[in-house]
Image (cartoon, rainbow, N blue to C red; front, side, top):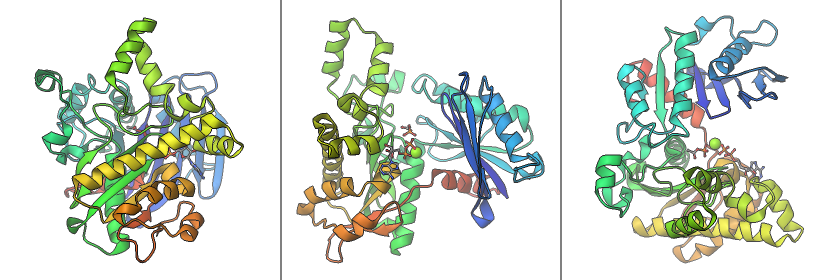
Length: 401
Ligand SMILES: Nc1ncnc2c1ncn2[C@@H]1O[C@H](COP(=O)(O)OP(=O)(O)O)[C@@H](O)[C@H]1O
Ligand SMILES: CC(=O)OP(=O)(O)O
Ligand SMILES: [Mg+2]
């Protein structure tokens, strides 16, 4: 069974075509800068890599171009669209309506649209992807896999904001959490890898990529996470500010006559590592600058690690302990010095890193704590696309995802 996994962002579409029974990636790639003059497509299949400029004005055009590449005589990997058995979509916001992946039908579409209000940056573009597939492959079943679904097990004391209650009832303003597909995947995978039962473990999963979030997973269920109504709360990220006093935002809005659009731009695109360092949102560049003595780069790294350490401590307190800490995401998988710095401060709770093993681990699945560490610290490369494909397979076969 071949499953096409799509992740539609505002100006990009990323995809993987997965032969799920063999767990084989047949092709992967994406289109970036949709609607701009320098749009391009990247395509990788069977060891061949291609990058081409393309004139693409919208998501339907982008998905059409991806399908054309997949079936291209020259370098495609399937003969016709008939070889695509199902499509799985990453849908960022499922609100309170979805606690698991869903076969897309009119009812599900209506509910995804109901979440537009609380997720204006994400759900409309995810919906554009669904519409594009419906237009091009009308008979292929489609599944929605929600970033928020895994966190629907959070108790009210963790998801409520201490705002007037009516804003929860009328406006659905509460904490939802994101990256759920990744947190769910690494939870399952780390337990498989260690040969332990997730129902018996207290796990803290740290998804540290360009966006980042940490989740407290108690006996297999998310009980708290750092992101909130939107993916701006919590950790300091590449360009997002994470936690900040709402009073500071109001003060800046008044003082500089900024409206909500201006603040959205500042808190989502101009803050975080980029905002503090003034260099880049990319941790590789910031690390290099810090190594050359750039003070603001160092401050950015210190703040970034401080926030991660603080939340691991908070979640260990919430669960009355922690058995396993997982690092994943581009930064979590590759940046050994960050893992070491964070874990050093967690020594009081029995965390001990094996420096040699940690330094040598550049994104491989593996334990990086010592034998005598009371907490297992593990690197697990995330695979959201695989998880989306697995859910899609289960749903089209009539099983529970
Ligand atoms: N080899 C590496 N060493 C250090 N950082 C890395 C490495 N590879 C990726 N990263 C960092 O990971 C981040 C992107 O993470 P990723 O999970 O791919 O992001 P996204 O949220 O876009 O999926 C960037 O800040 C990048 O610098
Ligand atoms: C929801 C979210 O924050 O996603 P990403 O980290 O991929 O931007
Ligand atoms: Mg990612």
